[in-house]
Amino acid sequence: LRLPCIAISCFTFAVSDANASLFGVSSTRVSNLSPLRPKTASIMEQLRGGGDDEDGKGIPAFRPYLPYTLAIRDSIMIAHSFHDHPSFGPAGGLHGATYTVDVEFASASLKHPENWVIDIGLASDLVAEVLKKYNYKNLDEVFEGGVMTTTEFMCRKVHDGIVEKLKEKYEKDGDDNGFKGWIKVSLWESHKAWASFEGPSV
Image 1 (tube, rainbow, N blue to C red):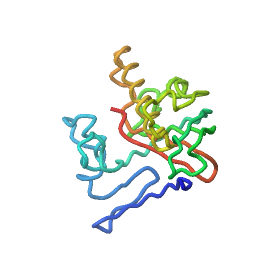
Image 2 (image 1 turned 90 degrees about the vertical axis):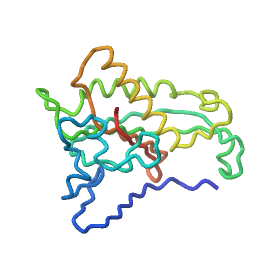
Image 3 (image 1 turned 30 degrees about the horizontal axis):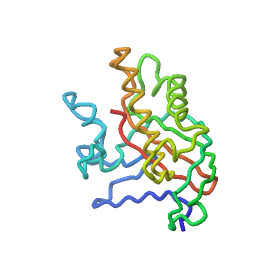
Image 4 (image 1 turned 120 degrees about the vertical axis):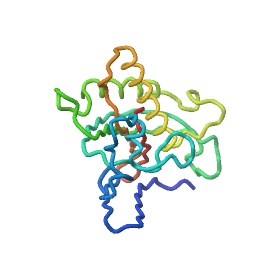
């Protein structure tokens, strides 16, 4: 049976001076963990302050220390099934779900002169635009081929959609000072269970 999702964060260090933060890891070993790199470093290299890409898929090993966060909350109602797969028990059949969606935008510094992480109106619109693709939809029809649309899977899809919308906006507007940071998407199945996916915005 599919058990409720439980978020667990584990950090293991080889040195005693590392400190876990709400959004990642900070350490006095600045060369390895700090997002502050030489000015010649690309934004991706700065965002990879949390560690090297371990699986070759362009995702840092863990989140860099980014102290500023703006969060947006929204919700979607969906229907889906797990195609009668025995691992999901009664949830294998068609059923409905209402997700509370939390999207966190984190950055190393505030954008000037506004002193914000990202325009909250823009962030809200981007999240709503991405969620519109799934709201009041049967995910079995949105994702064909028997895809298991688990909460974890949907977190990744929402995250990727937000990243794509950000790229489209700043490519269109030519805004080199747009949001460059870290995005975390959490989908809450209930007050007891949730899942998340996070990664860089670029």
